[in-house]
Length: 198
Image 1 (tube, rainbow, N blue to C red):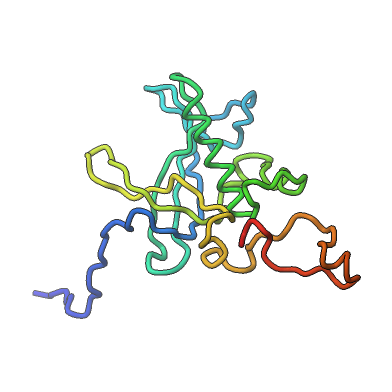
Image 2 (cartoon, rainbow, N blue to C red):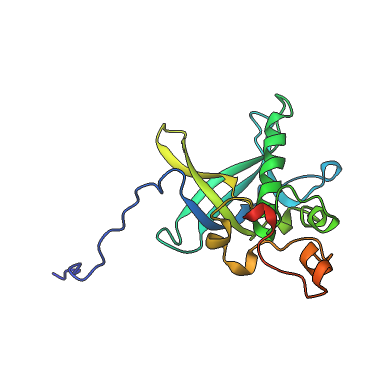
């Protein structure tokens, strides 16, 4: 009789939920649902339609990129349409806008042409694989058990954004006009954190 020896196996990993409110850098991937509606701009098979409710959404997976919870996964839906009204789709649009601001280092109050362009995508493929800073929340799954989800993106106006996203993604002032110091002294503009990030 032969035996399988498990004495040298690794210890079990803990699967405690990531605490509510934890800020984590995540990579979002979309699990394609195969539903397209070109009139809405939903192409490429990314959207999912629930045949029972008629709702349409992006079925998203979020993988933590680094830190204590690296490689942990969470799943959330981003609403595109609900027969009950526009609220779910509006919440989905607001979430995608915040994801783009977070991923591309754009302050939510920035209305410059560059910022507006950064909030545009050609299609859902542009969101597949995007990295941003997310806030962990909990909600109940279909069995009534708590599960960790990402429902909010942390944008550059948050005090911890630059530290957690890394200096390479820190927002830069959108204006190139010299500041008052440079105009008064004729010296190079003083650079640094924009006034809203102080």
